Image 1: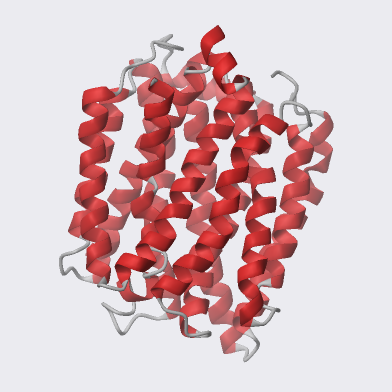
Image 2: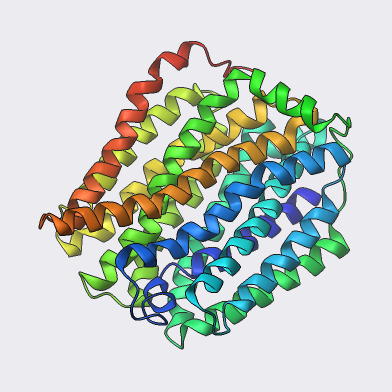
Length: 397
């Protein structure tokens, strides 16, 4: 029952974040007409910079304190307030400051809910219901990615009535989630050895196996950062799609990704999860590289294919973190995973914006070259980390 509630909270928590993707142009250049392409990309990076700062802090505090629920409830309420504040008129610096706070709160709730989910796997009932840790983390990944997939087209639909409606409804949803968590969420009581933050940090540094899923979380989220910023701007400014069309394009990528994440988590119990990450990353990188080379009518099919192969790299990375982390490090390990991902997401829009600006200055095809370089980064990552396959203890399931 609690696992179902946690999955519901994870699913709905992602709505407000991705609902903003189809209306990125309206939230940035539409409200601040003098912004450059790079400055518009900062809107997505500010949120992830907050996540980068708070991903380890929330996990450390929770593991040391031995409680998750109070931090989750507070984080959701602050997240809702920050989204509501975006409705008001601010100088662009103040606008980005609220995005920063939003990211801090969002990642705190996300990391600790993921840690609680990993603790629900204990005991014979949980194991039979979810097919072990692979199934549990596959469900977690599916809930998150399905929330992302649902938020994008919904944001595009609501955004047709005005971008501010996306902010108002998203902020209200987050406040309701905070109240639901306060009333219904229960502490699991698992993994509550109150180690000091110093001991936890040292233990994490010594756990070399975790560095592999962290590295791939970084590069995968970097490419996703490019998709939700650079690709969104490309579809609106270069191809002329409206918010609903952009939302549907994003959904074609995210829906198959969401639906296949749970099966991929189960599959990782039979296949080597490290090899699954490598194969998925190669296929996903080639797909992203091709986005800028195909005709506009083919982008939808390409994004659908990208969503299918992306599930092969996301679920195994979650499984590796859950398997390798010690009981007293669950929240910290999930926080570290989200920290790596958040760092990638911060750099994704910045990388996309910088490359587009650079290639535009050189009078080269800016967007196609940006997608090619970022896609090839996935292949480079696989080449760099292939030697880790034989050293990562991926068989503890």
